[in-house]
Image (cartoon, rainbow, N blue to C red; front, side, top):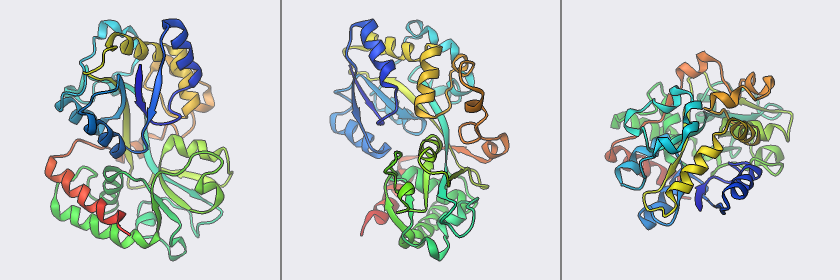
Length: 322
């Protein structure tokens, strides 16, 4: 059974336990960004994989393309453990994916290197001169442009072309301060740990993982609000192992397994029964579970009309040009 996934996004011990119990083999193919995953699937028209890990912003597109199978919820009884907030926030997605993790997009920085604490997106997009070539930005157009829009006081889901032009201008002005448009490493070799970069856009759980390697790394969900993301596990329409794939999703949502994976990846689980098995310090960590005020200002990144997506891609292509 082939799973298209981020690297280090499942506890290998849980995957091995599934293999043993179901006499199956789980093989993972890794992608490096949402855009990378989209390209891999577009190349095969969604064929060649049994399961995919996909974020809420792309899930609706995959459904429209006919890539995803509708799930038989009778075969996934552990769905009862999922918080309805994450299961039902978009009616048209019901039945095509099971929430795996949720979290926020914000900023991680080296408190011992930056000239002042970073609490706003504006400090990343219109940075202090000392941050020249010391910033890293996520290599996904949707996230980067979405947060540029929030910096300017607009919605991350804006379809207004004038607002998008303003975001483009902001990003082009920021470009000399950006060391790379890529996702930072999250281990002891991280660019943030070495000091090669001082600040980066990042997903919250990854910031928590990097903090393990350096005491001066701080994560902030900016005052303007950040992005809220939900990752889903979906079964591919072309899969020859649909029943096994649904068994796998159900197995991952056994409360003990879901709790174990949450501790492994440092993200918030949508599985309410699993939360009861997690340590108090995990549940109290504001990086994993931000306070309600910060969350209220944050936005889900919605599906965008094709013309707006093309505009996003055009803006991002400019940023990637040397």
